[in-house]
Each structure stands twice: as structure tokens, then as C-alpha cells.
Image (cartoon, rainbow, N blue to C red):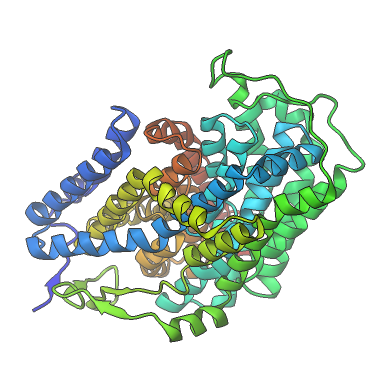
Length: 553
């Protein structure tokens, strides 16, 4: 007989919400305040989640254990598989010196750290978010930034801040497509609604990014370049989302943004060149800060060799992201394994869903279609191009596994925690707490999306988790369901920078191991502040003319 989720086990939402928050509070406090290593903090959060699920929410102990195991497998594939292989590629390019040539070529475009951030963290990262998502952009951009000489905190934190505005349309529109498919939204209408919310923040985030790095004065010195970057991303984002569809929004906007910024730099240069690799020059000590080195000149063939691995990576990731390719690869090999003792044995209950709905728990070993496999193949092809021998390639791969072993363990534990909170219903309790806010619901409903991504690490998962609830609440309050469905996704993008798996990906890519708490403390303010701004914007769309004219009913 299925176990039915209970969202208010104590008949008091204050007590139930406080208990539901315990696992998240334990993990974040351990990371952010007590400086406990990430894998230990994740383990503590998981233990707390198991205890709350069993003793507070009445979930059968065996079922709770199976949910955690199921989440752990999900952590390995796809997230851990992406992290492992992008670091493998980075190792290969470092060992033969091609990464140093790539750094020089980027410095040749501009030596100014602020503009490097715009080009790499925002525009280039948005391309990878659109093509692959699931941690890929942070892994790639953080690795490049640390190679360019950025301090570990700057490379990690700023990559996370930059990877926000593109997230709703990441992985070829997967979050929006899933929202429409699972909860019955009209795909084009909800896509258009998101496309009327995020462009404002696509313009704001580049300014916010440079302010976070260089301060207000440093930001104002290059405002023309920031404006070009943001506008050239925001305008295509609006046009494609409103008139074409969700699949290519980020890819087209990112390419346009990169081309426009590089072209603009041919006719405009900043009056002063910002060469400090740290956050406002303060997050590393004076003896660690190195003076800028003269930019080395390289031949055309050297530049082609240095950029080729990243071009190969982009091509492979883009091809693997195409639905027709994924379908074909899954047709070759993608066995599905229902999780015994869990699959279809949990029922999600009203008011989250109109009627009791069974939760599936099927692990699909889609190793061929996984983005991490595309990255692995691109790394192998790149290694051959760089004239590595097979023995060295294999040795480097196993060396990389050893290098990221604790990060992989952390990701497994984080996903186990997130999956358990989903199946036990504790994350839904937190969502319902936001839903009981009446006229303030547009603001708090947006924060519900933020919370969903912060907990699950995925805008797609947050849309699955809360998309139906947003629709029901909007109908009850006389709001547009499309507005609140879009708000769930738009608000969710700001939670991406504080979700545990993204922080682990960033710390691993920069090899700043055991500093996840430092990264979390740095990005948390930016995450909650931007999420609140999205909430205020959605509130104006709900109640304030002329913003209400943008709402798709």
C-alpha cells in the first residue's frame, strides 16, 4: 500500500515548517558558519533529513534509505560525471601548456579583469548553460578564470553569480519544457512570460557581477561595455523566447552577446585597466597578488591548438544537447531501473496536486546521452589532437578521479539529501509555507522557486516540485497562472548560485577544496538580494500598471 505524504504532521504549520527546515539549516550552518568540510556537512544534513523524515513525517525507514540511495546515484550521473570530465579536460590542457596560450589569447582581447569576466563568466558561461546546463557552465568558466589568475574566491563566486539569468532556458529549454509538460502550462505562453521577466535581469546581472568584483567605481569605469554585454543578451533573449520558443534562447543570446562585446572592444577601451585578480583587491593577501605579466604573442597555429579543445567541447556539448541526438543515443543504451521499495509507493497529496499522485523512482542509466559523456569524448578527441599517447590519457583520467574524489562524494550526499526531502514531503512543507501569504504571494511565490533551486540544485526540479502548486495558488488568488509558473522559474535562477552542488562544482573547478563555506558566505547575499528583486518585479507585474500589460493570462 502506498505511503501518503503529510505536509503538516503536527497540525501546526509553524512547527512543521521549522522541522522541515532542519536538514537544510544543519547543512548550511555546518558549511557557512562552522567551516566543516563539505562532504561532512552534506553527510550531517543527510542524517538530519533521514531522522526528520522517519520520526517527524512518519516515512518508513527503509523507504527513506532507498530514497537517499536513489538520490546518490543521481548525483553520480549526471552531475558528478560532468564535473569529473570537465576537470579531466582542464588537466589535459594544462599539462601540455595549451591552457597558458588560451589565457594569453584572452588577455590579448583585453587585459582588464572586469571585461574578461563579462566575456567568460557571463557570455561564454551562458552558451554552456544553454547547451548543457547541470553544472557545466560553472565548471568551465571557473576553471578558465582560475587559469587566468583570478583568486579562487573570485573565480568561484563570480562564476556562480554570472550563471543566473540564463538558467531558466538552460539545457535547450529543459526547465520550461518540463514545467509545461508536467503541469499543463501552454509552452509558448509560459516561455513568453519568462521572456518578459528575465531580460531585465539579464541587463542587471552584468552590472551586478562587475560591482561585486570591482566595486561601484570600478563598475562605472566600464559601464559602456557592461551595457553592450547585457543589452545584446537581453534583447535576443526576449525576441527568441516570445517569437520562436525556449530551446535556443540562451545559445543565440550568448553568441550575440560575445560577438557584440568583442566588436565593441575594437572601437572602445577602458581608460584604466583593472589588473587585480581578487575581489575588489581584498580577498587575497598582498604577497599572493602577482603583478600582471606581459602578454605573450603566439602564432596562429599555437592559438588554434590552444582553442581547439574548447571548440571541440562546445561542438560535442551542443550536439549532445539536441533532442534528436539524445533520443537516438537513449535508443541505443539507456536501461531503466525502477527503485524497488520506492517506485510508485509514495503518493503526493492535495493541495500540491489535484488528486493523489504516485511518485515514480526510476533510475535511467543514460550514460551515452549524458552531457558528461560528451565532455569525456571531447577530452579524448582533444587529447589526440594535442598528441597525447593513450597511456598518458588513461593515467591523467585516473589522476583526475583521485583529485575530485571528495567533491564527487559531496555531490552524491547532496543529491541524496535533496531527493530524500522531495520524497518525504519536507520540501513541499517549506513551499506551502510560502503559499500561505495571500496578497504577497507574487513575491513569496517567486521565492518559492528560489528555495526549490537552492534545495534541489535544478530549475527543472524546482519547476516539477512547485509548478503545480503555483498554478493552483494563482487560480485561487485570481492571478495569472502563467505569471506564477514563470515566476517559479525566474525566481529559481537566483537560487542556482547557492545550491550545494553548484558550490561544490565551483570549488572543484578552481581546486579550492574545503572552502565551500567561504563561497557560500560570499554568494548568499547576492542570491537572496537578486531573488527579492525578481519577487518585487513579479509583484509589479501582478498589480501595478503598466507592468500588468506584460502578463500572459
